[in-house]
Image (cartoon, rainbow, N blue to C red; front, top):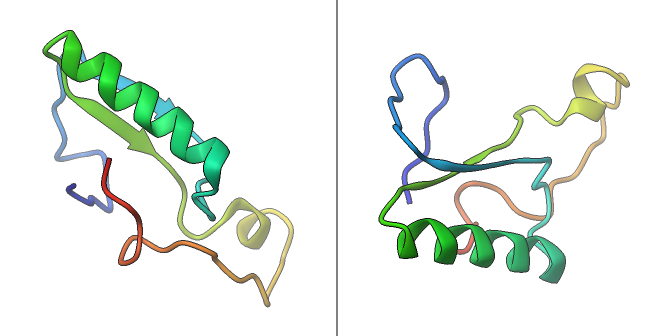
Length: 78
């Protein structure tokens, strides 16, 4: 798994993409990610996840005490 802090340097052609707030990779998120990776790899294409940091609740809602359940450092590999 690779992490990028900007989309300016990424070029993924025909990538399968999911977009979401993956602040905690619970079973529902895990199933979405497994399905994405499985389908993309079966088609011979890359899989990508677009998420947000800081969390939109911090940026848009002014939350100052937001706690992440999963961070890029402890995110599972799929």
